[in-house]
Image 1: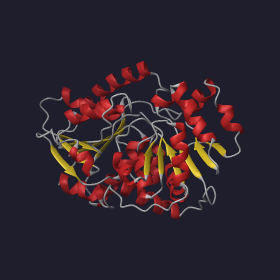
Image 2: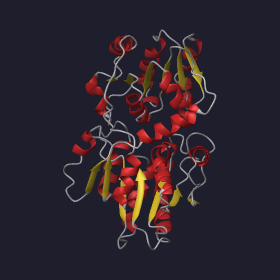
Image 3: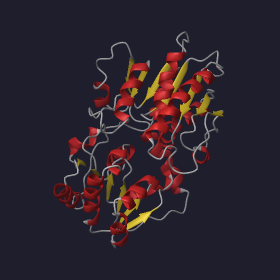
Image 4: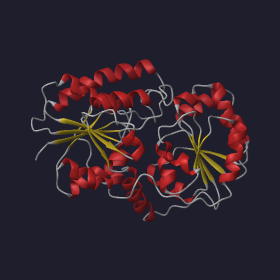
Length: 363
């Protein structure tokens, strides 16, 4: 069975979602070839989750949080070269049956497109977290476009929810499976690790904030609205500040306003274990990213989504997540509503054990 499976990972977020599958493969003694594109440095996360280090790293990982620092031309050039590098690496695996990748990053797109250059290879492309759609090419950008490209070039589509499965109905030539979301397994394992560490919650009652989407941080108008919402928060609020976000806040003259507010605590981005622990203890999430929307459902924490559109609509139907569309006054009102009731919902992403189901499909 040597090298019948190749797993390609580019970002920390991808590894967080795919490491439970790696653990399951290791547990069943099924070997896999692990390729890192180098989009992020994932070495420490591999150690944390006790999965093997990549067999090969195809570009030098960044020392900062982002490889491209929002420079589109640099990202496009990197991606074009990466397709050829992935193709070259896969050609070294003569017994290859499955190439597995996750999500909607540049690395995901490169992984799926590499099959274009291997037209006579018999392996199947497997996309995890398939079928997410916001139905807006501009938001999130470029992720929504990448998802459509990846779906086209994939053979097996593993969906995280019923809605994601429905979004793929027109792809009659694909193998489609709704197995639930691997984030359930990720959070379960991360929570077990957190219990073994001497972690302390930020407080008895607090809000977690994470803003980093390009469509937000590149827009002064949007960032002014987001900051106005944050300045209205009445309880301690911890803002995990990414490099790009901080840079744009300073450029727009908004950074000091947050710094001077007694309820806003600007902190460095947390590692995954610490973030999961703090999510499990917070009262509310204010985010513009995707995975945190999922984790809010798992921990049953209300969530304000600071976007105009979302590819993860499952929580909206329960009045448990709110798509703000950056309407300042309505969002302020919804925050107050969420901080009072004790919402309880059924998790739309299924139950723990998704990774085991994926292995069974591959077998």
